[in-house]
Length: 450
Image 1 (tube, helix red, strand yellow):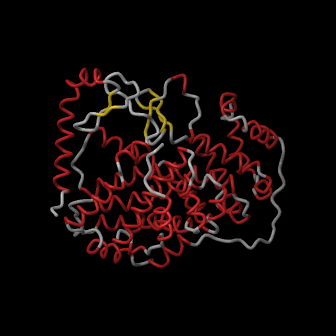
Image 2: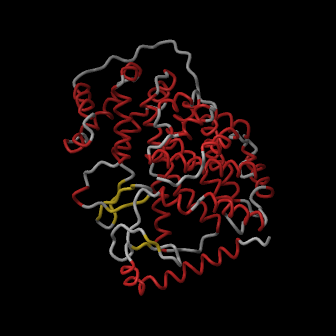
């Protein structure tokens, strides 16, 4: 893969400059510049990982000790979305003509969790995260609890409904709230992978204690296996959430394990079978009854796809006929996560004041500022790079085969050969005209006279 976003020397400069912000500074010019840096780092990290090239983004984040900064910034936006954003939307004097700036803030959390999902696959990243792993465990637990409670799934269904009906009667802030809730679903699914990598790599007693004793993560994971929020039945057909979108699954693949299924089962495998975890976990009657629900899901078809699970099956069979001794009470000097509590305590009682300040100073950009930001982001989201990040090759709009040529006018439809393009033109003509006219209008609006 020849496409790249950053050279190693550029990435090093970006990573060295990463810093933590206050809640009041979210959305500021300095914050926005760092958002661009993190977007580029995320894209380059994905390119490196998918091409199995030298993963220099991960190496630089580890060597400069910047993973805790990423965790802090992700939690900062999480707090902003929960505490500031709802207040912003209720303010009477807040009626932005353009919500682009706000959406970038909301999207920031998704960008960072995506980057963390890519780099936390490696053990040295988990070690370099240091004490922030505890904050990351708490973050993942919050997200998984939301997923189990159906909140994010209902939000996704609402977003799908609006996409299908094309409703336009919402205000810009209402539409933004719907988009934010739908994005939350994506974020929670990424949190599952991050949690699995932590269970793979951590040896910290504090982290293990946090997952097993404070949050009882195994029981949360059992609930996820039971409700399987990334699978749904729609109009009599099974759909699964794969590669960022709902896809119809043919009958022969209904029992095929998705990546998300695998992440949940591997997390359970690690938390229940690792010796350190078994010593710490309290297999009381409630926890035992929850864990034994898993036996109904451990079918031969599932174990054929993930053979390691045969050990989990044996463990559960043994658990069903024994009464494990309660964990020994030991004196432990336990570390505790600080980021969420520190951000909330520093800003407690100031939510409305911060919202009013940001309405006036941050989310009220001039037309020229907006154009400049749009241009900078257009450079960040280079079309060739974005295409290389798509997990599936584009399909021909006429015959459905793998395509390598694109409509030169609208850039929105793909074809395998010239013959298919000519054949498809009567159907594509109207859409092509609309897309190209809209694109030209955007270009005119963004154009800045020198």
